[in-house]
Amino acid sequence: MVREALLYEKEEGGSVRCGLCAHRCRIAPGKRGLCAVRENQGGVLVSLVYGLLAAENADPIEKKPFFHFLPGSRSFSIATLGCNFRCTFCQNHGISQLSREDGRITGRPREPEEIVAMALESGCQSIAYTYTEPTVYFEFADAVAVIAREKGLKNLLVTNGYMTAAMLERMAPHLDAANVDLKAFRDDFYNQRCGARREPVLESLRRMKELGIWVEVTTLLIPELNDSVEELQGIAGFIASLGRETPWHISRFHPHYRMTDRPPTPEASLHGAARIGEDAGLKYVYCGNVPGDAGETTFCAHCGFPLIQRYGFAIEALHMAGAACPHCGTLLDGFFAASGAA
Ligand code: SF4
Image (cartoon, rainbow, N blue to C red; front, side, top):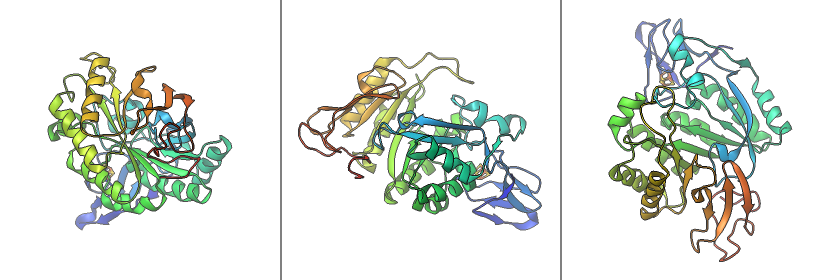
């Protein structure tokens, strides 16, 4: 399923320059980029994972997580192998890092039309490009997104935000919403823990907002790594600068992959981070990976009335009048089936 890449340039000596993400890899003939799923074959950059799915599931949209985009719906979620980050705490390292670790390329062959048909048959209202990093399988994601849009499905990106503006602008006409990981607010965290830089992520978030894409932000709160007051104030302040209506999901860390040297995030830390988000003026702050916590509930930003009560990825109760609070009439920010409002 090899397919010529989009957004690359040919350089002297048969090398190519990939334009999908901020690494902008210069790739010599016969070599692969940092994500290990894009290869220079005779001066032509190809995607090695076009249509080779490593995962496909009809998930609750809350699992992505999206809390303000078609709540209660299901999203057909797909991924190929590959990632442009190498986070030591990756929850999906079995598929995101496999090609980097041993060069393997594998997956179930699928055509874009099949994905859309499966999404419709399973009653999903959207397709999510998720689990690994969709930027590195952009060619396939974009092909699916075009057909999905024609069939009335929404397109959702769950991403580390490291794509170039060129990639974002190419996908934007078909893209409805994105959940972007803002993993920390220090460049050295991005450098040491992810093999990347912070600034391109911030730039993508700003650009998504300008393009009119609905944005939610997720931060995995890791004890003693990104949980200082200063760091969290930096993240919360930046999200508020995008727009106070931008939801912030603060997610609980569990020891995993190559980061087993610290305990799960204490619930008190999650609640402390949430208060910092509220103090920064954010209207919607959530605590994730703690089923049953009050931090999973959507409250009216005006009167505090509980509008959507959740348990994990399930909605337990929905108290809304269309897209509005039944108590004070304030519209809830986001995209809801009843109103179609965004
Ligand atoms: S998508 Fe892969 S090959 Fe392209 S610049 Fe990013 S890491 Fe390099």
